[in-house]
Length: 210
Image 1 (cartoon, rainbow, N blue to C red):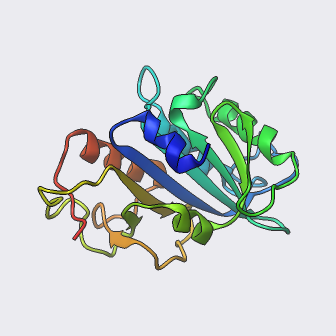
Image 2: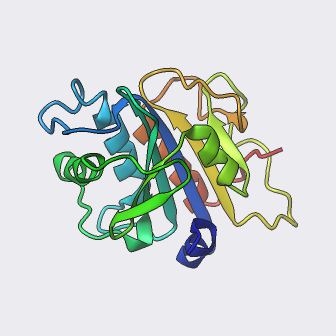
Image 3: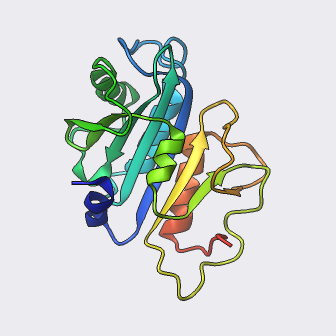
């Protein structure tokens, strides 16, 4: 079943998050004891993943999270997590890293092709542009130097049923696509940005998409 069709079943309002790992390992044996170093700051991506899908006592059922892995020789790789299908995801960084390690030990699938490695975890070839091309929804690129996300409002007759947010790791995101929006003057870590976005959407704060 295509992702667009599959994900419509997970909630009334779908939240998509995409994070680019500029040097995160895309293949090989993931060093679980060196996620911040040898794994190419995979720790940043894992914290972002946990912030996107986990609550204090459970898991959200309305989130799709995609990490773009650009580290090492060879093509870019994507790992996609569909929150309402996931099993065995816990709020422990090393445990989540083990799930990723089980994916990247396999050959990278061809661009545009997805393989389900375990419930709710999909492995595919492709980069950020390909990912954004697949989205049929407004895309917000988080950028501290842009206008605030939470100014303005969604038009009253809006039929928006999903939103996508794009962010980088600890390096500047090299992307000009999407609406640039800020969460404040300070540059925040990715998982903090995602937590703020969830708060704004959970509390139905009026956001600026115009």
